[in-house]
View 1 (cartoon, rainbow, N blue to C red):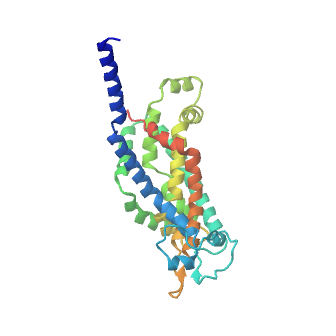
View 2: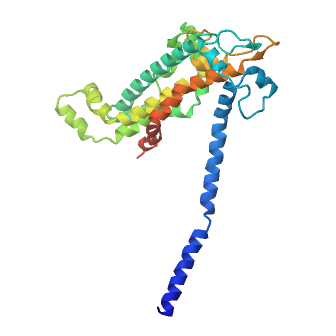
View 3: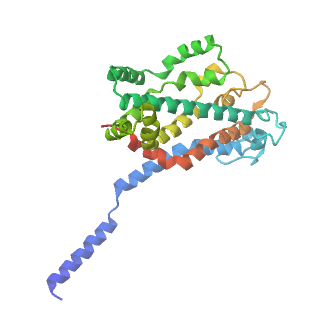
Length: 310
């Protein structure tokens, strides 16, 4: 073996060892940052679970423990109506059967709101993207102004309108103000529909299809991905809505779960809240949304690709 070959091999070995020994500081910092963000994000959910699995007496004695104290499932039993009464001297978070009633109200509210919002947003987006009529761009510009107006500014006028119509404590009062118009959804779908080939509309007209038939037989089947994404996101946002239902409902027959949980309050100063039961109810309330994320998580992430900006 020549001296030159030996030097080259030794140099190659040294370079490989250097590469192995070199610490990827940037990657380590990135992973540490991600781990910190995950810890901060997950910790509240862990604390809810820890409280739900703890007894109220033990919580009052050791409120700062990181692990469940007085491990028990009585909180879930009280929420689900399997355990009646409360022998711990606390005010129960929910009466027996209330949770199922609130779950029903939230399901009806979120499902109806999502159906109306998606239907009217799709038809409006089709009118702005695929139909040609005078003043279309001007009207769409006015629609975009709604994106710049904070939603809280329309709360009071909507509340006065619903009150004057006598729709307080009704599903109609919950749904109507937001069912007919969603500026973001219309903009989102319009941008996607603008990218569809114009030839499909020409082909539909040649086949004798009018605008409505073309919408349901041609455009909507080609727009199922963004529509499905908006359906999921709208359902989640409606399920988590709190302030508007709080304004227009004060009866268990129509209160959604978010208001039902938030309305929990101490009935007497001599007793302590049922924190175990309340946190158990919170976990049960979050379970439907958790299932939605597990089943449709990939579609939600992929929704970023459906913005349709040109």
